[in-house]
Image 1 (cartoon, one colour):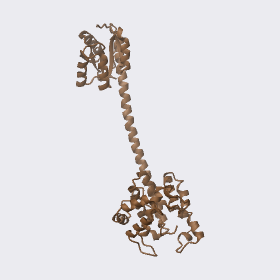
Image 2 (cartoon, one colour):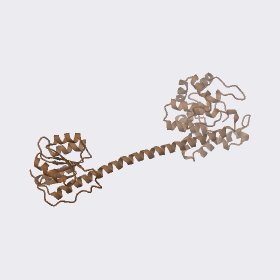
Image 3 (spheres, rainbow, N blue to C red):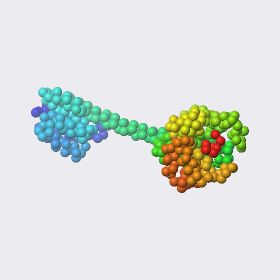
Image 4 (cartoon, rainbow, N blue to C red):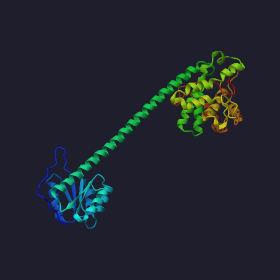
Length: 387
C-alpha cells in the first residue's frame, strides 16, 4: 500500500471555534502511510497517534479518548471492519473513517452502512482526505450535540412532569379540603351525628384497603363516603329533621336524596367516579334497596363497603333513643346480615379486623391521620336510621 498527497493545502480549521485540537488515531500496518497521514493532519492542527493493527488501536482507545479513528481496511491481526465493529460497540461517540484501495470501494460503502462516518481511497488526495476527516468530525459533533439535547430534553421533561404532578397533588388537596368543608357544613344540619363522617370515612378506608383495592379506587370510595348524603340538601328540613316516623309521602321524598346527590356530584369532573357511590349508597345486596333496586355485584363496590361502615358507626354511636351498642353486638348483626343487606366478601374482611382495631379507629382524634382525600359528613346507617 502507498499514499500520495497532492501539494495544494486546504484552509486550516478555525482555532476560535475549535479551541481543543481533535485527537486522531491513525491505524495502518504500513508505517509510511501512518507517518504521511499524521503529517498531513498535523498541518491542519490535529493531534495524531498511530497503531499498526486493530488490537493495538483498541488498547490506545481504552487508555485515552480520541475523536476520530482513520483505519486501513486490510490489516493483519484485526482488519478494518472488525475494528469498526469494536469501536462502534465500545466507543459509539468516536468518529470512524475507513481507508481502502480502489478495488475495495464496495467494502468501504458497506463499512459506512455499519457505522463508519466516511471513507477515503488510496492513494490519498490531500483535499479529499481532509474533507473526509472534517465531515466525519462534524458529523460526530452534531451527534454529540443531538445526544446532549436529547438528555437535556429528557431532564427537562422529567422536571416538568414532576412539577405537573406536584401541581396536581396541590389541586387535589384543595379539592379535598373543599369537600371536607362541605361535609362539615352538611353535618351541621344534624348535630345528632356529629363526628360520624370522620369515623365512617376511616372505616371505609380500612375496609377498602383490606379488600386490596387500588389506591385510586380507595380515594374515590373515601370521597363517595364523604358525599353520600349530599343530596339531602334538597330535602326540606320539615322532613329531614322530623323527630318522629315519616309518612309514606315523606318517605318517598326522602328516598330521592341519592338521585339528587348523584346529579350534583356527577357534573364535577374529579368527583364523577364517586358519583355512582352516592347514587347507590342505599342499595342492598339482596336487591331490596333503592333507588334502582340493584343486587349483588351490580352495586358499586364503594357502596357495598359504605353499607358496612355506616352501619358499624350507627350501631356503636349514642342516639337520643338509646345508648351506643358494644362493637361485639354490631359485629354479630353485620355478620347476620351478610348475603342480605351486605356483601359477604366485605363482611368477611370486616370480621377479619379485630374489635380493638375498629375501636382505635373510632377513637382517633378529628385532627388525626385523616387521609389527604378523606373527611366529611354522613347520616346514620340503614339498619337503624331513616332512609
